Amino acid sequence: MTAATGAAFREYAASKLEQNLARIVDCLGRLNDEQIWQRAGDASNAPGNLALHLSGNVRQWILRGVDGQADVRDRDAEFAARGGVGRNELLEELRTTVAEAAAVIRSAQLDQPMNVQNYPITVLEGIFHVVEHFSYHTGQIVFLTKALFDVDLAYYKALDSSEKPPYEQIP
Image 1 (cartoon, rainbow, N blue to C red):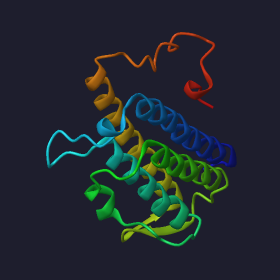
Image 2: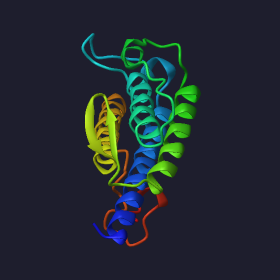
Image 3: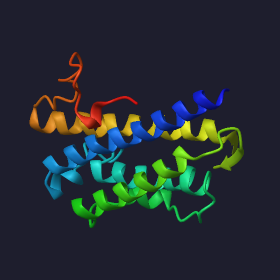
């Protein structure tokens, strides 16, 4: 991999996390506290659980796996929560986590080995996993928000425009 390709990957990965964070912020901003913790059933997760889960996942894989910070994740608690954490606290944790992770990603050594959850992988593979995983759960939060309000969230309204809003720009 060339240096330019590695730099482009790192910037794109960090930007995708930031873009998806903007969508989660928008969605949770539309939901009240009851809706943030509403589940379709016992086998489903609420948007609040997904926000906790994303913070935990990014912290474990990027901040611990890539940057060497302490592993403070309690994965079971992310899914067991049934409330008790308000919108502002969820968003503050997610914003802080994504900001820290984006900074780590932008300077990461992609070919370095890492091991998270007993997966021996490279940093590039770990970053790819996190971005894919974050996008997947962002889609779930977007879907739940659209279903609750029966509204087009208009994230792709600038698709054919040359002047895209900052959160929709691709580096």
